[in-house]
Length: 333
Length: 197
Image 1 (spheres, helix red, strand yellow):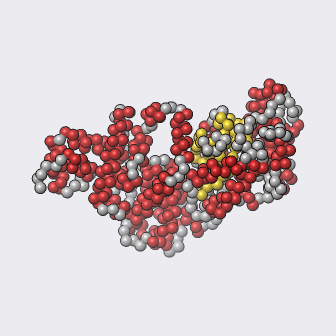
Image 2 (cartoon, one colour):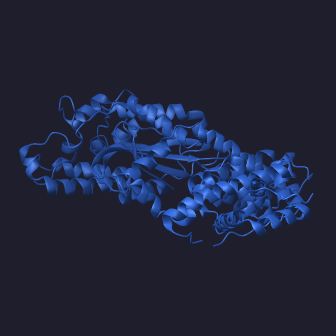
């Protein structure tokens, strides 16, 4: 068996030769071939380079959030239930109206997927006051988005109600609640649009459907994601996603439509995003705004794994065009 | 931090914990999580190539462990059994992933197009990312072989046990994987100069 090996035979054995996994006889024959073959010797070096490159990859730490979640797998089965806030179980319309929050829906605009001008119809005086007004609107909108607080929204409305309709401080709804069709007053449109026994999400914490004049950047979108992530930790459970996904998606989209938008048009892309996460997933936030100057939807979902009572602990943000299908930006926590 | 051989816990150490869990001590499951989470996460990361999917997959591995632990009878070392379960989870996950609509990829394309061109984007990648990309491009069986052997230090024989394949098959998968990696990395080297590992 001292027949010399050919290059093709040797190439197939080089990997095992490097690992010292060849039988003694085979190893000797490969060695003999390499002594007289520059091409195969060079191939050994190339393979050794590749192996070294793989071996130098980092040994990764387990992210702390994942480590924590893994320790809930057992508790999801046997431990105490992780409290979940089931938003559909909370009374909405009554509290919404009783607290005077209906008017505060000024911060919750018409979410339409058509090419609607979110800034709405402006008078010439309004246009003249544009920069300062935009800044004021943005500040108010940001405040409302950041605080996610009904009280803050009510206060915003109170301030707006007292403000003159042109020039100076403007009512937020003048700019963010225009009907694309008839220009009806926003409150009127919203109230008319609300179905019996239902309400807008502005009257409750989560999930949210809103529109703003905000022009998000990567940094501010991720800041929004961080904020939502922190505030929606116990919102949904895995069981919610399994048992009630269709219902929750229906309600969110119904809300979009109730406010004059076209909820059905976002159903397919929203479902694609939920499916994309591969695990239990539910929507928590949809905002119509701008991203780097382009009209967009910010869609935030919660997702997770494990037993039915585990929380959906991951939060992902998709910034899409108004069709919901083209994704400009994605971030996850 | 350079990759290190994963700690493996022999049956003597793992069996009491498993028995304790099966006898009703819920905390023992988390003891196993503590012992194996790093191994699982590193495998998942190298199989998927990104941290979000790796977290997803690691969860799936432990959910499956939770569901099937009662079927472990100690016929092999728990570490081998666990690694087999983890490798199978990875394969299932990758197959499922391949059937999904490519929303994520669409995002990547859009972001890449919005900034630098493809070649610049490529050049800007860290060498380690490129090595990871080359691993991710391997067929799944070859990927498993490379990760187990070159990253986690398992022998051919151990890999054969874990993957339930003959040693000759393991040898062949590893050889093919390394040839492909060498080709990919040679192309990278051509672009970036010598690999700085």
